[in-house]
Structures are given as C-alpha cells and as structure tokens.
Length: 346
Image (tube, rainbow, N blue to C red; front, side, top):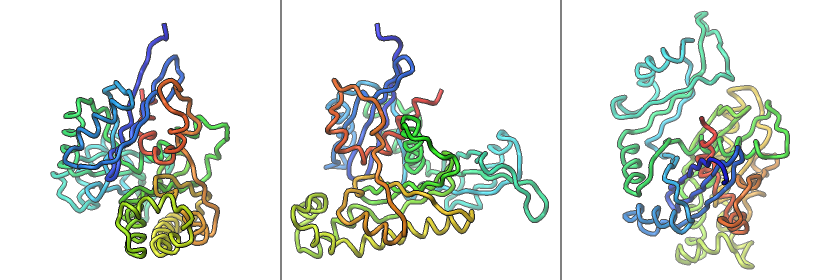
C-alpha cells in the first residue's frame, strides 16, 4: 500500500546519554520516524538503556549505524605518493606506523582519498595526494560491536563522531531552502558532556577535525565548585538559571574562555595551513544551550556564531514523533542524524 520502505537508525552512545534517530525512506522521500534520548544512569546496564530507549521510541528497525570516539581513535590528514585507491589500501599499513601512537596490529585502519585536494608535487618533484587516515583500537571496536549485538541490533557501519557531525550538516543542507556556497569554509562545533567535536569542512570535505576534552561536565563542575552546591543541582542550574543567569555566567566564564581558546587554536591552525579564513561557525550539542556561550565565543572568535538544529529541515511522522520534543532536543541530535543519514549510501 505504501510502497517499499527502508529504515536506518542512527545510534549515538555518548558518555552522558544515548540519543537515537530513525530515518525511513518511502518512495524516495525521507522522514524521521523515530526519535528518543535517555540518560546513562548505570554504565554497567548500558545495553538495557539502549534496548529500553528503542522500545520507548517505538523503533523496531534493527539496522543501526553507530560511532566511536575518544583517545583510542586517531585521525590524521596525510600526504602519500599518488597511486590508485587499491594500491593506497595496500600501502596503508606501512604508512600508518608513522602517524599513529599504537602498534599497527592493535588497530583497525581505514582511509579515503580527499579528492578536493587533487594531486600536488612535493619538493622532490614527486606527485602526492592528500589522504584521510583513521585508526581505531581493535578493543574499542570489539567492545562497541559486542554492546550493539547484545542489544539485538545489526551494526551496518561504525563511524567516527566528528565525521558524523559533518554528515549531519551536509544532510541538513540537502533539505534546506538555502543555497550553499561550495567554497564556503564552515567550522562545526558540537559540545557534548565530556568532549567537544570540531570539524572544519569545505564542499562537504573534512579539512581538519579534533576532539577537545572540555565540555558540559566542566561547566557543571565549575558551577558546583563556585556556588557550593552538588553536581545534580549545578547541572540543572546550568541549563535553567532561573533568575541566576549572571551568577551562573560568572561561574563558567573561565571554562568557557578555555574552550573558546581551544577552538580558536583549531581555527588558526586551519587558516595558517590553507591560507584561508573560516567563514562561518555552527555550534550544536547539549552544551550549546549554556547561558553566556554565544557572547564568549563571538568575543574570542571575533565573528558571528550560529546555532543550528540538525533536524529542523527534515520531515517527520507526527504520529510517531513529538515535534515539540524533537525541537527541544534537536541541537543534541547532530551525531545521531549524521549516522542515520547513511541511509543515502547505496
């Protein structure tokens, strides 16, 4: 009656919460058909948290895309002699040893030619290409897959958080009435609980990515310490100052400055490396809602900062998803939307 359906779930398992988005394609039209979020109250019961969240969200699709992140994930943008993709894959294990702090036998390796860079000639006159190298400790992948499969799910792809962030922005742009400038350089900043993801992209190609270990929990700790209250009350006050905006902003300002300066270092690195300014900065994540963040970022970056909702241009099944709840939590769904957008991969 409704034609053939394809569904895919983007499952973002963070340190503080689990977030999920289900995208379904019917007759070449994509809709959000499932959405949910849940705090991680007991890491030993993480599998149960995932299972309960999918059930509560009414998601029955078993095919999921997830992501890994953290210090066991290494991303490098390297130069390699120009060669075919097949030869590049073969040469990867020999090249990787120069760039990663782990034994090659301990990691899962992947790479992709960055075609936007084309081929260049080095000082010796040899042709080179730019390659994105990703190395993930095998133990992290194994633990992640074990969790997913224990929850009765079928992992389709295991991605990396920062690249899922870029995919979310690209996917959102595809459904936006705005016409994007392919030459525009955009810095995506997603502020989570324990880390902040940074991905600088141009024409949907990642030119730089980094994780900064300053984020929402650090703001909570600053409020708790300065105001002499427990972390639960501090976390609540962080998002809902309820008349104490000035006091909360004073508590978190040093931490906000530290985070902004770390992001600014990333912008400077890109701009010096490629002799090109970053045009726009888009901020998402649960930490983006903190009072005083926009003013601090704009002061440090000396440019406008935009806040975006990765779900705002997407159609939803209103009989399955609460539009108001989705709008409230939309800024936190960037990674899960980027993961679910893999439904476009054929």
